[in-house]
Image (cartoon, rainbow, N blue to C red):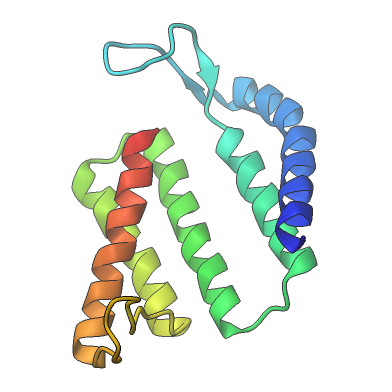
Length: 150
């Protein structure tokens, strides 16, 4: 049930923030122009992510008890968002984007202690020297896959 409330809060906050964000995008020139690499055929504002991040973070802050792990996840989320803004403004190369993803994941793993230490098909714990690199590899891979999908 908590997930439904979180989704609704994120959705409502995002929908409220999108119209002013679009006006702001026009003022600051944060417009994505179509080209051969883009799917869209018209100029579109690049600020939807700002509204989505605000909606997500507000939802988390309202509904989840903040502990070190949650704060690390939010920090990693904000690092990814910051690199996304930077990429929108400066068209970063893939190496810088990858470093941003790696930084975000290292924050989540090192500060938040998020580590995959078991698997459903293995009946024992992985030692840290395997679990930590595996977690970093998996989280960077998932982040990269999501980044490539948009």
